[in-house]
Amino acid sequence: MAPWLQLLWPLWLLASAVPAAAQLRAADAQAWGPPAPELLGPARFALKMYNRGRAPGARAVLGAVRGRVRRAGQGTLYSLEAPWRSRAATNPTVCQLPVSRKTLLCSFEVLDELGKHMLLRRDCGPVDTRRTEDRNETLKSTLPALNRDSLPQDFSVKMASIFKKFVRTYNRTYESKEEAQWRLSVFASNMVRAQKIQSLDRGTAQYGITKFSDLTEEEFRTIYLNPLLRSEPGKKMQLAKPVEDPAPPQWDWRSKGAVTNVKDQGMCGSCWAFSVTGNVEGQWFLKRGTLLSLSEQELLDCDKLDKACLGGLPSNAYSAIKNLGGLETEEDYTYQGHMQACNFSAQKAKVYINDSVELSQNEQKLAAWLAKRGPISVAINAFGMQFYRRGIAHPLRPLCSPWLIDHAVLLVGYGNRSATPFWAIKNSWGADWGEEGYYYLYRGSGVCGVNTMASSAVVD
Image (cartoon, rainbow, N blue to C red):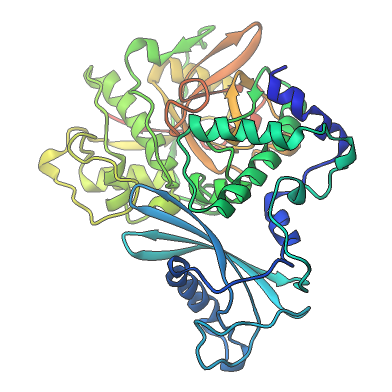
């Protein structure tokens, strides 16, 4: 067992950690201060969206605000919280709300890309915000469900040391001491979550510290996953003709030159675009003998059926490629990680597709199709992937429902490790995640819905 797992094992035996979002609500009795200047813009936008369509007497006022900021490239994600109630105020931007039992605690996720705000999430509920003595959000104060008397005396010191190493490894910087303390508490809670996922996995996967370990589950889903995969029907495609030949015992398109290097979608829910370009790259290679790295940014900017960083569907993306007249290369139309004006040039398009097809949900037939026809775009339930490090993941079905898919990826091969069958999956979170950017998932029982949304472009 890894040293950090040995440290955390007593926590798993003692109790479940409070989810990070609940931890924040548990600390709501802390004093609230005036909004930090940087938070005012997104907070006002969130309030405006909240009040839209409400009667004047039911509108809320902006008072105390606190929040966390996460930046990547030209995008900024604001996680905001504000207690408010419906009341008049002469200056809503500075009016301080009295705290009471009737106060609503509202939390928001606001994405700012190039000065444009998007409301990603809103959640309001009653909360008891009676003031108590101020306290720092240290590790011990944010794990209230644990029996602290049973913890090692130096637990906080050891956890702080592990967190410090994480910060160095992934080059993390935080806005303030308070933000760093909050991230430490999230990190500690996530280590307990990773241990629970580890104990329940039936495969050979190892879970632990990853570059996402300082994010709450909600933040991770909001930034990196794609809820449209399970909520939108998408374009109906023709069913592909099955491959008659049986599937070979193993296959890997990486060794045959049909797969480009692992890419990184950044703080953008654009997995759908990476899944599709990976498939088209493979199809073009098989038909034309040339492997080109194709542009995901073209799809973010020019695919009007999908929602760029807020998610999309492979079926829509195929239609967009066909209607646009092809895909430019990554070099000609580089990835920015946020939506911008469509700059597609038909003269620069290097690749085209003729159609797209839906594939069988039978995994043996999927394997046979992959070995004969190339890498496959699929969608999966990303349960546990926030903490995945290596090995073959095999989550319990109730934990990884095939009906709750939220991440698009690329099947590039399959095989067996010590008699455990797997799918080799190219992800789009960079080569510093998983096994050099790859995820290995148990093959043969529809784990995490890997067989429910398989598709491919058609290149004649």
